Length: 111
Length: 433
Image (cartoon, rainbow over all chains, first blue to last red; front, side, top):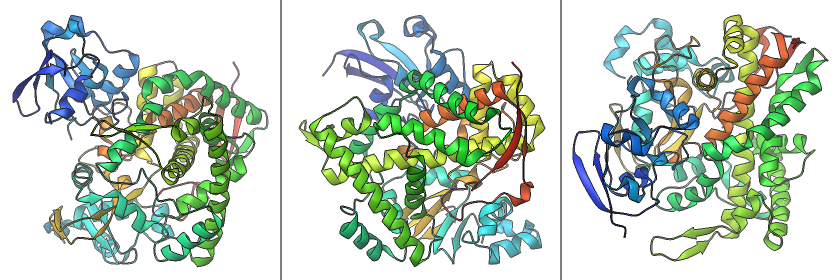
């Protein structure tokens, strides 16, 4: 059991803090393990489906970093809900530097 | 039937009352039937197939979100050689080294463990590393026909490409395209619902042949592992919830290698055939491709819109494990469903003007060409890459692509499972550099 902390606000607006997160685990995996609503992770963390889309809190964006081209291409598939601070949570791996990171689950693409 | 039926045209009412997805004419040109069902009877019992056709996007998403109520294991294995299952399985046991149920066509929690093994093989980043090799293969194929000015885009380009790519990944032998293509057709036919007994027996013989070939390769890799996916599967370790580690049974491993070989090659080939069809028949799309070829974002969207507009996989199976309500209908336990992806991708409330080719759709990722939920296609990144590289290289090398037959003479494989062009004779010129 790790000792890193992650705060997630789910798609319904409910905020939870998890303080036992291991280094190297992705935020998608953290969300799935705790049943955070709105995170599906269909493709299993392969950066191929955009069902683990989160908005990174602006304060944390610099440390979390920008998506690479492949991830950007997937975020662009849901461009109606894409923002400057959009990331796929499967591509954010926990590290000491990200201890305390805060993200909000993005809504699904609209009809 | 829902209240919407009042707004249906007489022709639509007639389609709902009498048309069936078992009819090859409906399979070939299904959109009017899909539309009538979405508006008039969105969860529709097709009496000929004895399957419920789930045609609305929101209902398909609801099914995909509940894999325990809507079982892939029961749905898929019920559909397989339906009506002739005992004989089918007996043939494989007697002559094919065994009957191996598809381990990936299963339900959680078992499915979750099997699926994990497959996920790492085709992440978008791993597939990106394969791009140069896929590019070489595409260029070889296009160059082999480029100066002839005519080709069958299915048999000479699409099918050989997808087979060559997966053959390399699995570490199988080159030069077997015809055989692997026949094997793929035989396996896919088992969920197509269109074969008679004779055709089933013939297909089962092909599958026996396929299984002996794969088993031989697997035995060899058991003894001498290589840098290929068959070796990975044969030697895979599955972490269990209690912390122990298990290996796959041989039966499971055969089914997974078989799935890897077959699942992606026919469907991706179909996507590429559809690409040629649309380039040959829609000058605006051909121009759009030329204009997009150096823009990675546009190319990604181009591929996605192609998959939305013409999803290779038409419909896949589920079976209810309890009584459940879906789209206003109460389904009994044991109801067989077909999730009609082709219909959901054509739903006008989700994708306005659905027959238009529009790469700027803001919700383009909502299409269900790859299914969704825990069973979402595991090879999706590889499929996208193959189609994208093909589209790019076509744009660079070929021009004036035209059908060599009338569009209405294009034939589709008779099956409920996919919408697959049988052959596509085209003419073209070489693009001057």
